[in-house]
Structures are given as structure tokens and as C-alpha cells.
Length: 179
Image (cartoon, rainbow, N blue to C red; front, side, top):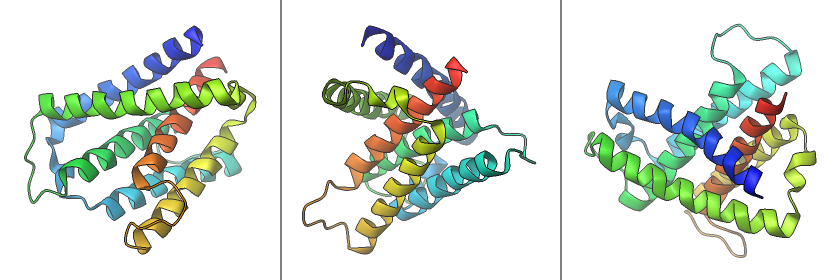
């Protein structure tokens, strides 16, 4: 598990660097996004990954690695939006956003540690393409929950699904490092 935690932190550091640079370039312009728009943005990124995986080629420069990082960062943004509510303008500083980023990454990492214990790191035997599919499935679940007004009868809520998405995308980044 020590190796997993180090690999997890290394993958997240890559994402955090991008998040921080985008905050400097654009500020917190994402604060105006509704949760459903963030879900759709992540869906677009995951669908692009799947398309590249299936076609074996791409025409846009951003690689799969950067798309998985974008999925992680937007999933964190979704968690922040759930906590703060949708803003009407960019209203948080880079330092505030980074603190919230750390909070939700820590929450996802803790979930990963607990699930990793129970599932005995089964993700290491998965294909990256399966992780892509699981992310897409989680997004479809989130869309259904959103369509149900955020209500669930027996299932985990939206935030838990975003944490799972973060973890599957981190696992994909770790697996990409191996190859």
C-alpha cells in the first residue's frame, strides 16, 4: 500500500500543478458552472479518451494523460461546487481553491485506501480502457441522480460518485506511468 500511496500522491501532484496554473490563467471562472455542466464536461473528456482508445489515433494535441488529469480536476471542482453552491462570478482566490482541492483529494484518497483494503488492489489487474468505461458509467449514474433531483433510494449520492471518478482517473494515471 505504501507504493500505492506514493504513486497516488505523484499522480495528484501532476493534476494539482495543472489546476494551480489554470487558476492563475483563468481565476475561478468555473464557479459559475452548474453541477450538471461539470458532469457534461467530464463526460466529454471521458468520451474523448474512449474514442482515442478505440480508434488508436487522435487529432488534437492534448493526450489521454492530460484528459485524465482534467477529469480529476473537474471532479474536484464538482465537489467544491456541491459544498459552496454555484457562484454568480469568480469569487474565490487561488489559495482558497487549492485548500478545497486538497480537501477533496484527501477525501478521495481516504476512500481509495478503504476500498483498496477491501478489494486488495484489484484495480492493478484492470485495463485502462475499463477504468475509462467505469468513469463513463459513474457519469451516467450522476446524470440520472441529477435528473432525479439529487435523490437516491439506495445508492450513493453524487459526491461519492465524483470521488470514485477521481480514484479511477488516478489509477489510470498510475497505470500509464507503468507503461
